[in-house]
Image (spheres, rainbow, N blue to C red):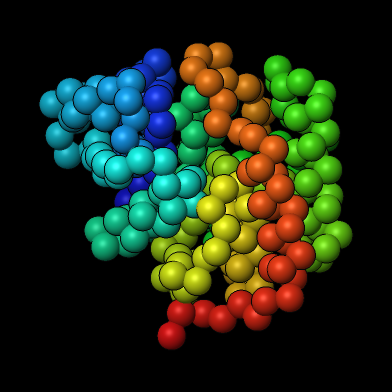
Length: 239
């Protein structure tokens, strides 16, 4: 099985090199595609330099300007599908998602799950170093999504997710509307409505140590109102 980790970046020079080394040190083999949105801090230049160390496994997709997390992942999904990867995993660059959990997500997929979520809330609340206001916003957002949509997922906004190839091939990626963290909800909801099996694997989420968070109230605002629209949409597979 071929595994691809998608890592969107914007000003992650403090983290990206260490993340590359860590992922490539794992006992399960993963390739990496860094999707950089024109980071002014030179993140892409660091990745280009590290490609000399990993010429066949480290890849870079550069985009001009901040185009949104959702569009970055969609570009990565298409890139991975074109190159016949079996599992494509979303992951942050800031180590809030522990790379050591990557093999666990893929193992759950190999056991039969179509979408595997690295979940902060499936076994209590496993979040470290977040302010209470942000934790409550995130936790309540997932309760809200479950209530409005009926989707049986505890961590609907999670950004640490493994998709099997068959899910992404069946979904109409051109119809995905939300761009920020609402994108994460929309992807899970679409997979669920199409009948795919979703499994949550408990992880411990640790807030970033280096660099600055890209989270904002507007991102959650998009998700809040987008979920109401999502509930009314008919999700169709790609023709």
